[in-house]
Length: 406
Image 1 (cartoon, rainbow, N blue to C red):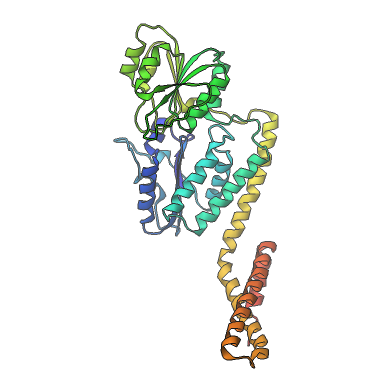
Image 2: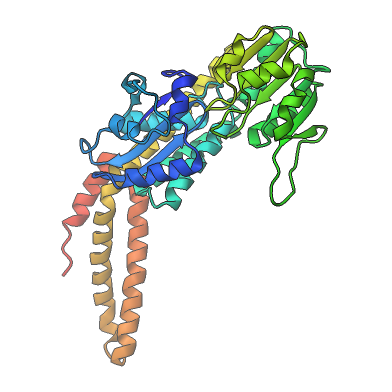
């Protein structure tokens, strides 16, 4: 894998690697055409963009491949310093930890699991995955679900929105009675509106007009057409924007004009990548602008430290299970070959009792007998594969392959 994340790059760099759904589809299709690429999955979130590739070692340059699909490169910027690359077992362990929530800016947040599932689903629908990536991502998602089911992140904030609210509270900023505008009515926007309402704020949500005419907003919130958002600026104490649009939702000049003469202290929170709010807005007097990099939540208690150690041991075990599958995957043709030869032997021996039957009936029964025998033998061998240590398994296969069927 190769990618960038919040550890290596600021939001200004990460937004150059932010893919819309259509951009991700085009990038996957282009990557799959590259020589040596057997399969690929592209994960693009607010805090990271990572490319996972199944390929012949040494056949491709991962950093070059990732840089070649940039949606919005900055002129004169060399991105190599921001890339992090992992191969083999290191890449596997990274994905397991990532899907479980270990690598998130807000440790244990819920969204990453859905984002990983969406990334592999998109790649699958475009025929860009292979068996290796399918098994890897399936096991990683399963491990992520189990970590959450075990309650290992019960201490953590669940989203960037909740982390932002916690940060404001630490600064003695009360949301009770505050007038808030939430720009964006997608998943993150709705979550933000609900969270602010729960804190006692008066929340208005922007909506766009769709052909269906049906737009749902969270209970207890007011609505305003997106095109009228600046008209509400003078009355707002807090404005939060969280859209998936590549376009700015707030620009400095119209925002400054809208709040001119109010003297109101305003908090602006931009949780989008690419950013929704023009960064020059932070220059305005009385405005505090936070982007997504301002909010982080980690392991902060002794109990959390214990849970982290438990989760790490659990993920190590899950990654080891994948490593065992990977190491033994080349045994599958050998298992099938042993099963086929053994089934033919059984069918031949049993067939002597069927020789008096009509030819057509005998051939049908012999075929059914051989197919059934191979399924039973394959099942036994696959259970051996799953139940024996690797060295024992290989020794067992070598012994079985030496049996002569005559």
